Image (tube, rainbow, N blue to C red):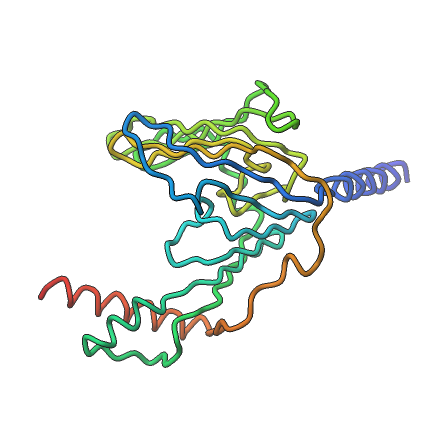
Length: 250
């Protein structure tokens, strides 16, 4: 009987800890700067960025957080990421060159992916194999935009096994417990430098953390995007790749 009570207490404690986390609602605002040895011109519209946060939900339109040049906005709801992507210009160009696609729309697509929490369990395991990476969380802290940030290092090993570490300062009091917008890290980045190659680098740093001032409407996806089935998306991706390869051969 004592074991049962102990298990029940543990479950209740776990549930209370889960519900106590990720209650932040607000906006994290950033400045984006060129910080490499080789200077880059940051367009005015890209010199600032922001992420809206409500518990485990996040929404951004800022290019610095996009992994695809076709992305126009990203909505994260816990472990589900929904991207609004616009392939309109690419499709129009390819169609003008005679390419044909099963998909007949204008190229504005909704792409949704859901991750599994246990897929990120191994991220902290030290893995120095060529082409692999692991994440190191440290106890070092500093204050950024009035928030205590903890240092995290992402160790990335190239094909020759050389480590190319990326330093990131995060807050584990903002955003999802597993932040799939940033490869499953345990927190919200407040500062990070991104290697752009050839001596170029971009650093984004939080300048203000605004509590409140977000509502449900701030997390709604825009209208006008097509939702395709997995099979339709796969077909379109394959056809796009084939047509681009044909153009390169000409």
